Length: 151
Image (cartoon, rainbow, N blue to C red; front, side, top):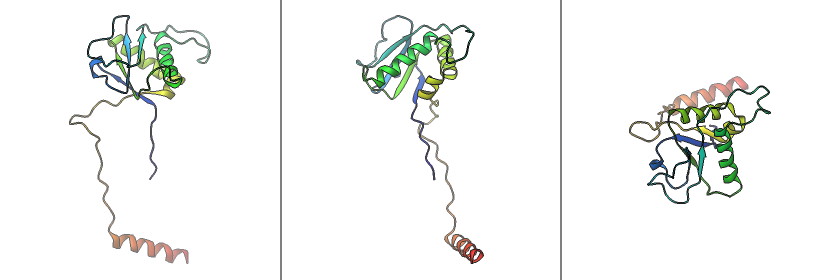
């Protein structure tokens, strides 16, 4: 059975207090880092303004301020200029959240490095599906039948 691993960095839209070890913060505005955030976390700032439409192809269009902040944060992680993080917590209002979601959807570089995290399920954990195991006799009968057809 193939296993698919999405190695992109999950982006969670949550209060800064939910950030923990191994996370990075993307904070809207120029205010101080909120209380309760562990020291040493990589922090990037964003201006919530959505970039205006620019004529030209996507590869030539300049990045908006949100995309630029996410790009700088990823490069700092890759170049070991910031602590390695496995999740990005975005602390922003509705406009800032919309700007981040739009940047993740529109920028090919960001879409390859970040993904919107799945919301937590009530009760927590991962939902597993039970797959019934075939009866051994039925598997033997299928195997015998297949070998008979090949002979």
